[in-house]
Length: 274
Ligand code: DGL
Image (cartoon, rainbow, N blue to C red; front, side, top):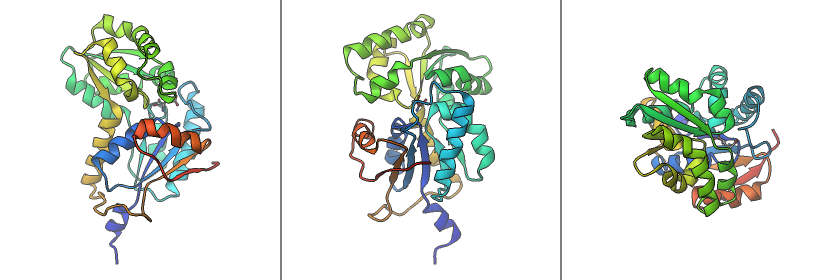
């Protein structure tokens, strides 16, 4: 018979995002923790969260989290920067499993990297307006200079596959002019979609600026927490035990776009109404 600990370790990790963007976090989790099963929820019927009010985002986040809790997850990862920015304290209060967002891991990596003490943050309007990154950065180092810019069009460029063309470059140059002028040496990609625009962003700000991928940092944090709690799954996934993806609308579109985010075809995508 399995011990309680083994049973807990074999449970999936719940990951949620407002849509397909959280797959950039799944990609990092798969790379780092290939044995971990993921139950993903992409709120494709209600995306974007980035331009919605705090109350609405908290309400959606709780609904999604309750859905994932019913799947007996061992940990909840809020892959969406906007939801992490505004819903994390509420989610942590509601559930007794580890709940982590992408803000703190991204902020920690940025502080470790900056030599000039100047960090830029780009994200959705909601993320920038919440000042979540700014607060997290200042909590680690109160003297750090933080500059924030919302880049809302990046989400659409990434979803439509326009992440490497001339138009993407023009928009990126325009958005990131203030970052260049302020001479930040570290730039947090504070939105799930922005890693797909890494090349154009790099060209806009110059090679010397280090880009921090919050999703990648979050995957490392998940690994640390599972290790510490002795909850890593040591058994390989199989046909019965595999990651599953749920969306609130357009499962076919999700499958199609997910190729760009995950570089592989997703087999198990289901539509559910919350
Ligand atoms: N997933 C969101 C984020 O990381 C971007 C898309 C949206 O606005 O919902 O902030």
